[in-house]
Length: 256
Image: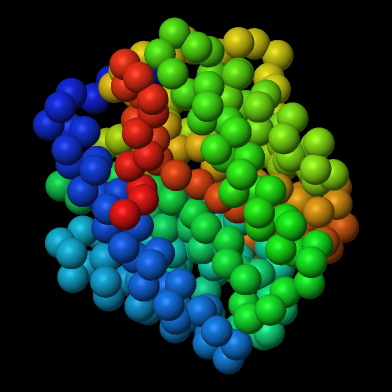
């Protein structure tokens, strides 16, 4: 599959889609506290995204499992050992939890995508370190997100930083290109692949998203067809931004 290089007008639409995503994250962060349900966070996100003239990208996405149900919510809310794709509902957050929220928004035919993991109240030191390392690994990776570099340099830098800090990177789920579709070429592992991957060029838009576990990198999918959890039940964190490759430093589109 070829990589879709965006022009100036398309990049402007992606900036707007990603601004909506960033503003939605800011809204949810203000509402994360012990006692709130994951379903309430989903409702807030859905209402805000639609108020901005956009649509939630995740709602109704087909399941990757054969005969699996489409994703039934507007955002993914994953708690503690849930890595990604958690389905919001009646679960109430508790003091000491960590909660990963993945948000996508489509604006005039183009998508934005970003994920954050938040502490609920005060968390134990190991969990806070996990959050810090996961976020920092993203920034270590995008040091190499420059024209004429190859994709594997981003992936390798993420893996090296995570493992140096005693954690593991998920292998079964990866980042991706993004634009007219939520998932486009190229695939972006968070670990060093066997090939160098494509050469980076201005106009590429990439969703770089480290998924980092305290214990093993192995994961499994629950019976709801969506929620991915760590195989050993230890906590996981997720940090993602949509970036634009330029002729200089990469531009992070999904921050305010």
